Image 1 (cartoon, rainbow, N blue to C red):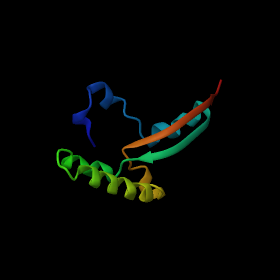
Image 2 (cartoon, rainbow, N blue to C red; image 1 turned 90 degrees about the vertical axis):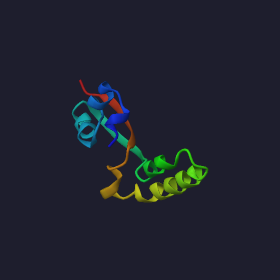
Image 3 (cartoon, one colour; image 1 turned 45 degrees about the vertical axis):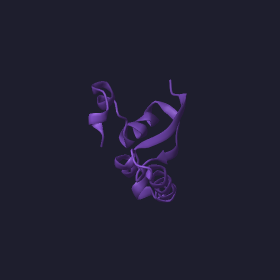
Image 4 (cartoon, one colour; image 1 turned 135 degrees about the vertical axis):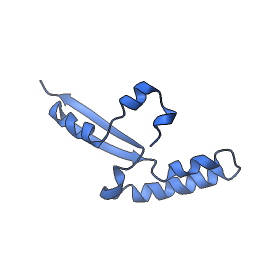
Length: 88
């Protein structure tokens, strides 16, 4: 959603759900731990206003609930995952 805010290299190397799923071909354990920033990104236009922190906190609280839903979690801006036990 924000390729204009990234370098060309970053834009070309953004990992998606398919990339994380493909990692199972190379690692025995692919563990997706947490998703971040779906609604929170909506606070960005308010970053220079005094209400920014309140908006950001409110949207983060909503994110912590809705990003538990399988249908929405992969729409998050960031995901934390761990790859371990590389296959030979």
